[in-house]
Structure formats: structure tokens, C-alpha cells
Length: 508
Image: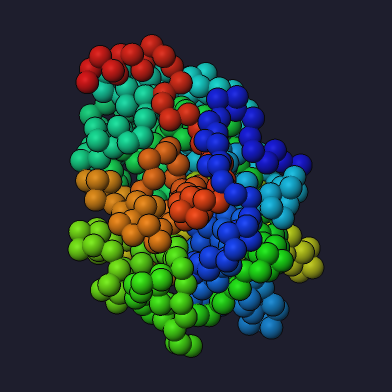
């Protein structure tokens, strides 16, 4: 059993805004269109539906979950499998995402912990996060003490004053200070050891599918804070015990259906039109009227809808949406092999120091569907990722070759089936983007945004930013009707070491 909402005594809870318990008390239930069925949209729909609001959820794909979704596919021999966009780590400090998942899994029994997250460097050395103290700064000191690539001598050589922003994060102040600097230059400026840069880039920068020279140093610092220096939840994480639809989204769809949410998958929203009473939402099936809208799309989808909706928002707000950028493309390649990988192989291995491969997952180590296939066939299911990749027909072959180098037992394995996915729809957190990034609140009180590319001034990232903005979008609309909202949680929005905070304050 996992712990649903973490154990850090410094977890911060922002109480639910007060109001009426149910929209039925208003005399007429407001109707809201939630556009996008990923984490952000599902969270917003849950927050609204639990207060009795009538919700219609539009999702252009045929499945829910967005970038954490999954769908049915088949291997060449006809075997039914569930494909997805790849491995995701459900960290213990993802409080708002985990709160969503407890709606259908109160003890989070459909998640299982992974004991480690090893990282391989170009010289074959491996850093691990297993067995570390969980409380800062002892977690960082213990990691440096035992690391083969980040040594105590390296720790002494770091520019302490320059590195203060890593230990004194506060949002939005950190962005005001660091958003104009790229992550790679920041680490160079503080004398971060060359041999250990793979640690920062693999754990943090590569998680955003971005080249370190394209990623804001403020985003890097916030990630350090969220996962390591600002949280005692640790870097150990959980993963679903079954593919994403079965473990997460099918149960949540049932939960929402019980609360009168109409879920319309395979239905793309083309445009919005502001009307005196709300919004006219147009799809291929026609136009319907709603009192309010939550746009919880990915970046390309949000830009397209806003561009087709000239009556929505202000010109400056529309320009901010237009200015959102996507990270470079990435490749997910999943292989069904006719033999197992070695028993000692971890479920997940970071390999960003040996490009073009960024990580290797062995799905049958933790996912039920893959485990059952492996048990039945004697094989294994392996997934390879390449981030910030250059598209090309030879990349898949290059990933396979790297797999064979790192896991030699796969060299002679026969590939029973393979599926490769190219995608380019993740937000880019580039230099200076923070100040221009649209927020949950928009110029129109009946319109809210949600998603991992949307600005919210809390120390959150990735899936947790998507869930957090989803709750915030629901709260924004609920408050307009005088309805009660939902609590929002996070790691502390400041560094945990008082002396360092005071030193940082003295430098400003």
C-alpha cells in the first residue's frame, strides 16, 4: 500500500475556498465545457462535478489521460496490447495528482513503488537514489558522499553563493531571478562538476524533453526544490500496476459518469464564441451553449482553438497563448522480445549520457499486462525513450543498438513486436517565458486555463502542475458561483534551510 498524500510534515495545504456545497442550491446548475481529457481536464471536471456543476468533457482522442493515456493495439501475431506514450513516475510529492487518484483508489493500491531510479553515465558508472535519507539537506549530502560521479570534493568546489537559488526556491521570485538564464549556463556558472551534469540533466532537464541550453534555469531550480532540496518525500516514486487506462482513467471515467459528467471522446473542439450568457462551443457535431469553459488542451490544441475564437479574451492574452512553444520532438519505442532481460536489470534506468537513448524501462518488472505477457511467452517488454530528438528513420535503430550495448543479453533477442511513437506537443519552458506564460485566470471570469504549460505560482511541475492547475481552474469557476472549492497542496514555497534563505535575501 502506498501513502496517498505523502509524509512530509512541511507539506503546505491551501484550504478550500468557502461556499455552498452543491450547485443544486443555486436554483440552476451551471453548465461547463472542459476541453481536454488529460490530467488537467480530468481534474477540473472532477472538481466541478463534485460540487454539482453540469460538466461536458471534450477530448479529441479516443481515450482519456492525454500524455498519460493509453489505447488498444495489436502485435503482429494478433496479441492485444495496450500502448501508451511511455513511462511516467508518480512521485510522492505529487499531492494534487494523488488526491485526484484517491477518488477511485483511496489507498492508491493501483500504484506500486519502485525502489530505485539508477542513472548510468558515459563511463558506465551508476548513481542511485535508493536508501538515501529523505530530509534535506541530508539527502543531498548523503547522495554526494556515495556518488561515483558527484564526490564530496566536488561539493566543496561548488560556488556556494551562486548555487543559493537551488536551496532557496520561492515561486515566482525564482523565475524573476533566473528565467533569463539557461539551465546549462547556470550549472557551469556555479562550478557544477562536469562528470555529474548528467544527474541534473537526466533527472530534471530531460524530464521536460528539452535541451539544457533551451530550458530556463528557473525551471531547473524549481525541479531541484520539488524533488530534492525542498521536499522530504524523496526521489523514490510509484508507478501504476496496470496500463494507464485500466489503472487510472477507466475508473475515473466511471466516477465522473456517476456525477453526471458527459464524456465525449473522439470529439475535437474547433472554436469558442463569447455570448451574453457564456460560450458557444463548436465541434464537428454542432454548437452547444455553456455558462463557462475550461481549456485544458495541450499547447498546439490551445493555440488552434484560441486562433479560431476571435471573440475570446483580449488581444494581449491571445498573443500570450500564441507565443507558447513546444519542446523538441521525442520518440518512444516499445519492444516485445522473445527472451527476458537479465534478472538484475532495474525497472527504469536513466541513460541520457549515452545519446540518443535517454532511458530504458522494463515494463514486465511492474506492469501487470506486460508481466502476464512475459510469463506466458518467456520474453520481456522493453521501452526506449529519446528526448529532444532529431527526427529520422535511423533513430529507432540507434536506440536498439544502445540497448544492446547496455543490456547485451538483448542482442540476440528476436523482436516479436515493436511500436514506435513520434510526438511533439510538450510545453517548452524556455528563457524568459515565465512572465509571458498565460495563467489559470484569464481576462474572462467564465474562462479558465489548465495544463502543465499553464503558469501557476507554486513549486509544481509536469503531471503535478497539470493536476494543480486543474483544481485551480475548478476553484476559479466555483468561486464565481459562490460554490465551495477544493484544497491545493504543495511542497513548501521557500527553501527549507533558514540560514540559506537569509543569505539569499541579503544578496537581493
